[in-house]
Length: 330
Ligand SMILES: NC(=O)c1ccc[n+]([C@@H]2O[C@H](COP(=O)([O-])OP(=O)(O)OC[C@H]3O[C@@H](n4cnc5c(N)ncnc54)[C@H](OP(=O)(O)O)[C@@H]3O)[C@@H](O)[C@H]2O)c1
Image 1 (cartoon, rainbow, N blue to C red):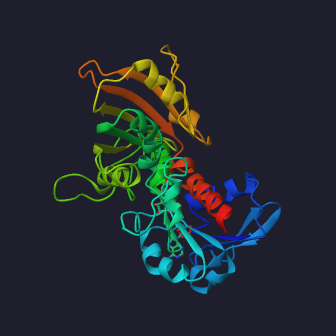
Image 2: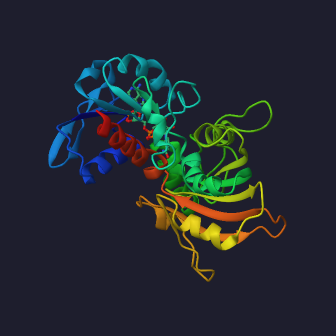
């Protein structure tokens, strides 16, 4: 089987290459594509140097499955055209809420892949790790409402913003003037309660993505209210999630359900260090659940802490898992 990655030089594209490299998937040919700026550069894959091609010159019929990791504008301009000759799995938000496009988390709603028109959309990183945890709970105790606050790493914004955190940290420690290009305020030694653009009602698009995508993936009846915050963490998004059920729950059963949640692992020792932080989740395929507590202010609610690598399960890993599901049907 042949694969292609559009945006191969970026954060998500590079992770997709790494995951394919480590996987057991038989890759006959891998085509790496980016902007003309990167064309000609070489990336190693399974002991072979692959030269990056420029998108303008790339022939989409060369690969059966094409991962798009180059943002919404590229998805808008190229994906429909590409889908005439290849199956597109897109990381951007462009197709996520379109009615006939499946929005898939491999452990949560793989059945959505049964019907598609050669374009499949990968959810937002913050939604991804949250729905992994919500789905098995919703299956047992119907979820009524979710209140989530995120602590999102800079790598979630792309390679350039990630470099900005490193540069600002260095400049700060050397007492130099800090300049911000990719964020609206300094991100080093700070945090910013703003991800993506503002909507009229005061929410940001990132916050609305968590609400709308959760409804599309699990159940339209689940209400989600989110506050999304960028923090000076390199990789690994964290979420504080309050989950309110329709009815009373059995706490031991909740722990059992979370312990068996596909793709997740509970680390919750209720002692110093007995929880997972983003540094520990970086590079891991697992989504971690810690700090599981009854909500003392609401008998029908619980609180949890969820951490996942935003570039892996939050992006590249899920696209490769989607590809694996599709390959079984090809
Ligand atoms: N980072 C995350 O945690 C995360 C999670 C979920 C979803 N996503 C989504 O995944 C996508 C990629 O994000 P990223 O973080 O990997 O971004 P990134 O690090 O900024 O990389 C962007 C990639 O797109 C390529 N590109 C940009 N303009 C192009 C053009 N005109 N023609 C061809 N290629 C072009 C870049 O190529 P050059 O290097 O040649 O410019 C680069 O390979 C975005 O839609 C993002 O929203 C990201």
